[in-house]
Image 1 (cartoon, one colour):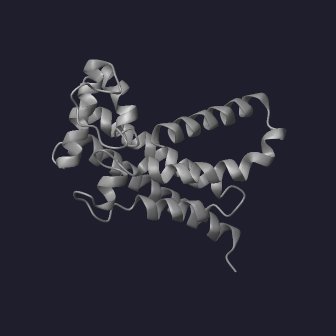
Image 2 (cartoon, one colour):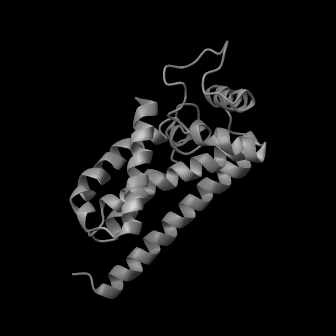
Image 3 (spheres, one colour):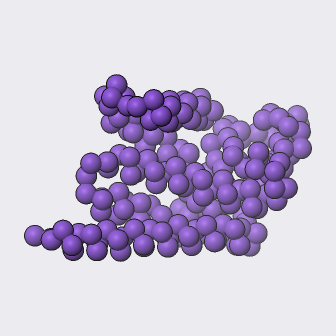
Length: 193
């Protein structure tokens, strides 16, 4: 049987490890995105720049992918690019924000369970074990993060299923947060559907 102190130390170590992983992912995104660019990412970067220039989601004379690339970090990167005028920084910040949404959903799903559960799941998800075109890390946390929204939506749905019964007991502030979460979920679902 693990004592409470051992459990707290384990949770602290797992939390530190997760924090280090997210920090490394953040630093790689910020400082190495230019050197880790591939064909898919280059197209996404140019697409984001053109969308910002044209101030439009649909570009005339652009060969759109079936999803319009809106189910990737592009969705958040375009408004950030309008502010920063740096596509690499915009995509990197978008990647981190979407990763944090993913991790938040994992923690919300495991709410009420031992803290080690969401920490371990988040650690395993955040391990960038392969980097390259169409490899896990590129598709989840680097460059265009083409799969981050696709994998976050089912988690968001689980959060909705788990928390739907507790909505009646929420304070006004928490109710507003839950409504904002639902708006984000349904917006992403509509855009990627």
